[in-house]
Image (cartoon, rainbow, N blue to C red; front, side, top):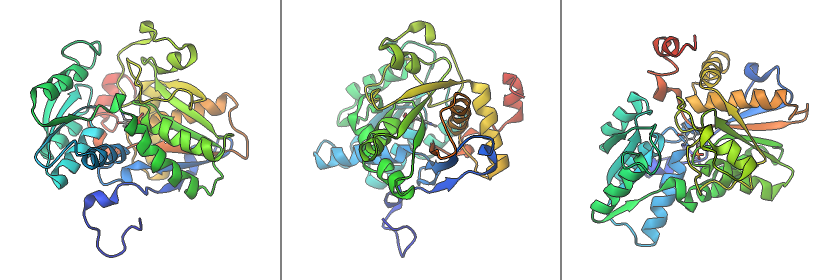
Length: 331
Ligand code: PMP
């Protein structure tokens, strides 16, 4: 697809083909060179446009959904935005079960896009009837002519990144990429992008980012879900209290965990140094790059790609609010 040449058919034609921007000041003390894939340049301002469009268009091709049907999903906010946007253009109804950890801005945005939003407690077990998984499942069951996107357990999630994000990075770096660093939530981005890149060059290292309070890193190391790892944390979209089958753990070489505080401060530093206004998990990815650097992962020839999943405007009442930052003890 070539952007900005003549008329674009509709907003959905602008999904993907996001820019890869060189980082300068923020990474000057790290070994190697660093490039950020800015997923905020998608029309729904996050990487989730890719999976939402891929999953819906696959269902359309298979005749599973038709105009007037309802789309149901669990989301920390970004997938919801993408689904609501696509629903408007394609004529679907959109019902979203959202975690109460999602920023107020995100929830208001979803409502503005015409979605029906059910806010569910974040800190309950996944099989608790109040959890956003169970609420979405129930709504799907109760709503005739509905489809459940089920991003955590849908293989089309990583397939979207295998078909788009991976090839874009390979082309943009002219095959020079040596390391990929990605925030892991459903794991779709890291698994699909990582798989494609490793197929091009098996020497590429795929480095995961997990949250302190999530089970992913320990599961990757031991093959077991350790409930002792589960603790409340603030970053939305990063880490998990269950094991999503959308994650292909074999593609991931290693995980680093980051704290809420370090990720928040890193996000704010990115704005001040690079003029890029990133979401909370972008700060988490940069913080992980620093930790990987300290572990000796990189040398002067390392060509490191960081995926920045979304835009800072979604976090005005969180990491970009000094009041919120002080309340957390982060400033
Ligand atoms: N960052 C943000 C802001 C997200 O919303 C998500 C999705 N949960 C991720 C990172 C992680 O992406 P993935 O689900 O593909 O692992």
